[in-house]
Image 1: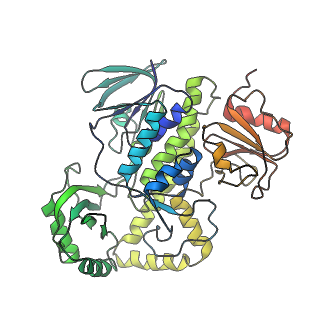
Image 2 (image 1 turned 135 degrees about the horizontal axis):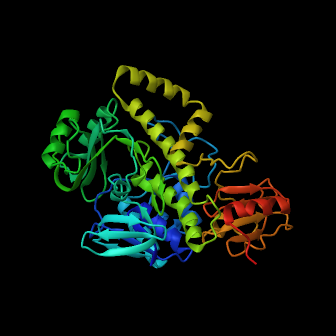
Image 3 (image 1 turned 90 degrees about the vertical axis):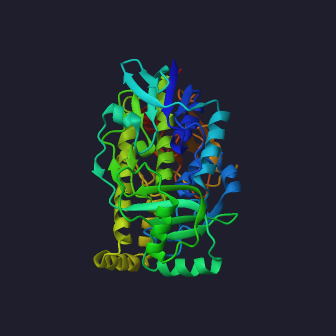
Length: 475
């Protein structure tokens, strides 16, 4: 029997497979497409996702193929400078096409021992007390202890489970594609600058070899949004919005996206879980979708591995739903707000001007950027120190830095006192005695996802918190 089947080989599924393999979980990724997609829907990684990659030792590979950009201007396209003193060692956006992110994550998952099976479409499932049976389109049947649906906004897994997906349907549609243009760079720059004074859903960005990424508002909402737009449709909309089609020709690919906003009623149903777009969809404002999915996987991976390995304390796997659904609800809200601020309606424009004024205050600007980049998240672990529930930023130690200690995906006790012990949990929690000038507490216990589970210097108090996240002690 397979330990975990992951349906969907996008960034969420690949990140989850990698996290599971860190704990020797047998994992199979089923991807219905026979070849990697050429469609580039996401163009960057925010600070929290960059931290996640750093925590697992992957960041150098991404930095080598990406480009760093300032974080200002990501809330509804309101141009403001990057806020100062962001609580991260990575205060930038990493520009990198989703196709490259997919490839790097697939290489990482494969290197760790995950099996990725392309051309395998899940069409049926049923579960019992002992596992999940999966049926593929070619009639193959597989059996696993758990199944995770990472299969996108139209998730087959979610539909087969009968999990509700309430929210709002698409009301505004946008065309997207990579095409060649004959217009001169000077003409392009002048027209785009003029149009974007009022229409922020429009853009033309040069890529390479005369190819441009073009984004334009659609004329309406198609009945079947799975139908790829035509080049003529894109050119017609470019004329309507910009007065020219820039001589668009030879498309590499064309696509469309909408502003539907939906959230799964539950992220877990027995032995089946949902992650990424299968659990939540929202407008792409702020570039949060891919990042939210990667972070779902980072939260779920160690918890599901603990369940498979048999040491998960009661309620640990359910905490995935509790923690991540509330985060997604916040993202849905901020994207709804941003879509309102992008409207050309006079009332919405008045609110936009007011929000822009408020963002001149450093604290407001920082607060909104922390929402977009997800570094402001704090899970509810109850009352306690201000660090409790927050992810720990990378800090320098006397010997290296914090994130270098987290590559294995285990818990970590960072101890400045040298008097504490994790005896009984050493198979799940590393104990490092070191100090940092940036850490003004005696010791912190970090979960495998880097969130602070305990702060203090009392051994008995530590012993009362270790079982909450790491199960019973082993002799």
